[in-house]
Length: 423
Image 1 (cartoon, rainbow, N blue to C red):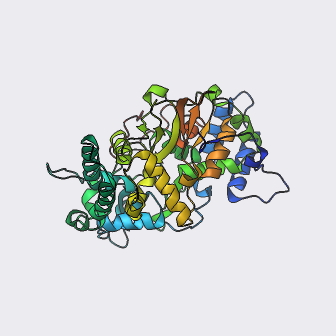
Image 2: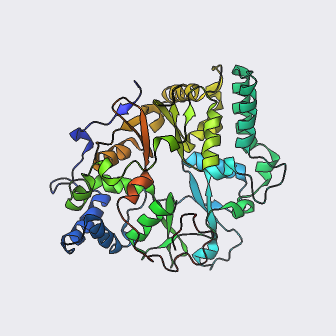
Image 3: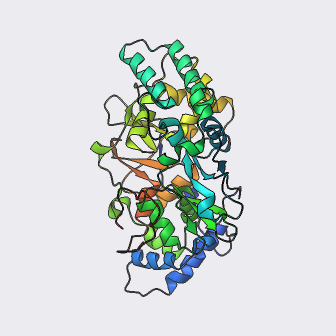
């Protein structure tokens, strides 16, 4: 528990928006919501008011990313090179540009989809041949087989991490397979994006109810992606709105009052600290989730967290395993923290676990998620036992609700629909 950071109600986490303080682009956006909030019918509930406010603001008003550069991957790029591009820019996904599209192509013909880091490393292309195996599957199988035989030692650790890296960057399969060859495995085809005129409400519902972690915003005139809005960037916007009436009326409610966490403790996917770390990535691939907790031998105490983003340490820093007797989840955490300290790199991984209790407000949770740049917080009881997990999507799902029939024919031509689709 020493490495965990229990959230405290400290004013340092609350950067209130006042008239005397300089306002960020996100805070100015929050002021627009405030103006709309003030004219809503008084009999509406806070959620109904927020729905109406966000429906009245176009996504074109959302501030662009600090870099203001949208990283794109060409369709003829190899999978190995795609991995390098995503890793170098420290992003989890990127839109794929069809190199064969004519110069005057519309945006929907210019792009063929979004390729995801997790998809490249954990899923072979479709259709799958009987012998095809992803690099992650190969590494997982090798390590889990060795562990079951009791033969996992320092040589296996070094060789496995090295082989895992080489499988993605040197194998004929990953060198010769192009991004366009796995287009059939993209979750949205041909492409799901918003136009600048679409509303904030549409964007928030897609990020919360339709399993999207990021949404491209297209400029119809230029036929290109103008911005990419992520769950994290929306959480940052909310954090910058602390102190505004609309935010306070919603954000000061306790987590238990709004039904968070959503998942019961017995349904949480977790990895034990003495299990191979690649078992964690295998579980994330199998369950299609972005992160899982590391628990002690009792299975009740959370001692760490591994996210799909952390797989890049296997790709870019395989040497972190060279001095370890086994690549357990526990040793992985220790190794990565040491690597980050040695290389003076800043990463949420280095700051340890972040937990909270059900008595915290959603405002406190948002401030912590934003300040720590993390995607999930684990909920514990007074004894420190794991009670649940709250993700960025969970928070956004409590901000707005989907009116019946809201999307209409919005998804026409965009297949397949998400499994939880209600349209």
